[in-house]
Length: 272
Image (cartoon, rainbow, N blue to C red):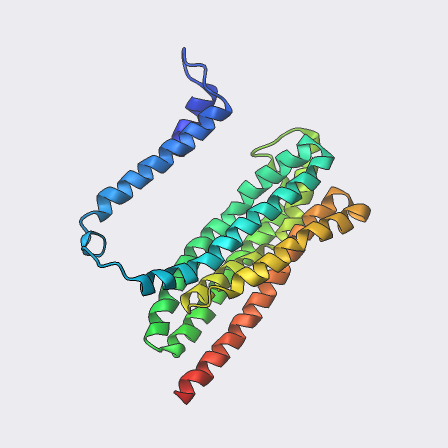
């Protein structure tokens, strides 16, 4: 719905001249409202939703405990991204446009692995509750292999064909040059970003939702001083490097930490 409405509401059709940026916002709002209504229609008769339940403060506190750290992680990520955008502004409107388009192209990675992340969280949660550590370990190995294959493939596409990808959105010479550099540099981090997102789902599944936000905040915040430091010798490419490096750090450390967590869980189950 969003894709269909965007060109009509932005550019208009026939006697309707379009609303520009406001049209894009209205298209997004309309799609969100539609999806919300569909959810309500499809879930109102489900026993899990429609069944009357008694207020349970203990369960509510548990839900908040598990969710608040994830919320903080996403909010701080957005705030840090604003600071990075302020640094990028120093290179002009073309640099901002390149970053925005680049993020949309990069969503190929995180939207795909985001789906796997949700599946991993559900699968691990079920087996963690059933104390089936063997299935968690096997599931993580297979998810890691799948993520590695996909992440490597996306990295190669970004590194080898940056011009072809970027030319789908921007065609002027300045933007194309900046875009090629962006895609190549960010391309080296795609595998690690995919590893990070998949492992976040694994942590969420075993109830350790507080661990990923710690590393996410530390290394995402590191982008700001890194961007300022690397932009001195490398210019705008230094900013892209800071983003890529933080993703590499998060991917490696989260994978190592999760494997250590599995070892600790194995010991605790053996004792009990």
